[in-house]
Image 1 (cartoon, rainbow, N blue to C red):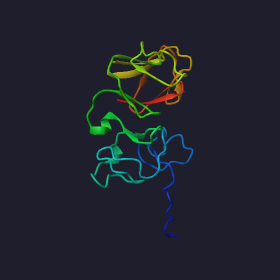
Image 2: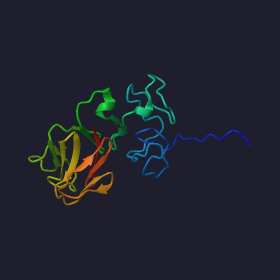
Image 3: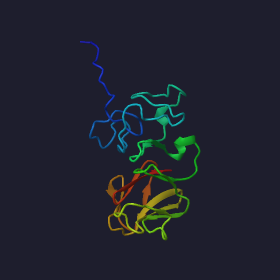
Image 4: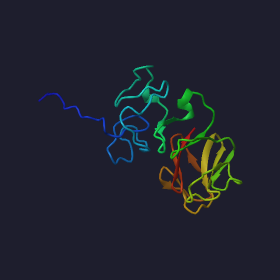
Length: 192
């Protein structure tokens, strides 16, 4: 009746990129933290945001530095290289302003203007999305005012999405830390 539970082998199951919990193979959201499953990782590839030590499934604290994972900033892996990429806050605890992390490459893009344009026309945007013909010339803007950041679709051909929901064109839509912004089929994670 009170026998031992069979311990399940989780070594080949994907992990949540945010909290390290085991994900079901086709999970869209993590059942522990509720965040969208971006890039499933294998056991041991989720890293402590403070010291970089590999993290085991279910650990609440880093075994090397004692970092409390419950208050962790996100650490994700680049789809291209598989290397872990940390948000600015996770990298050193220093807040340098909002950034976008391009999921396909892991590139960090500082949002350093009140109106920050994204698209494929390098002469008219602040960040040029190269190698993606689905993104419009001036696809969207990240706008900062009133202490918040917003994304505004500039009437693009293939829409802009926040957490997989299409946003109306020419309307400021508030974005928060950890939100995934998709320009057509190109994903970025917003870090405030």
